[in-house]
Amino acid sequence: MAERDVTEARRLELNYEYAQRNVDILSIWFDCEPRRTVELLAENGIPLSPNDEGKFGVYYESVRQDPERN
Image (cartoon, rainbow, N blue to C red; front, top):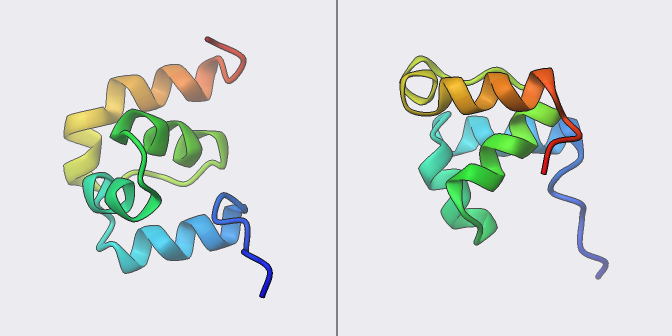
């Protein structure tokens, strides 16, 4: 069975919902750092939950403004 691309926008949004809109939980599922998860959400235009906004909002907005950053 082929693995699905979990970073595809709609699938990513659904996974974020399943993770109770929690970047830390989604990061565990994706086996990556929360920072990378925030990047994926920002690059796909998926808004953060209020709790995640408080923790990651500044970084999320910087990614949204400059998706080509390093």
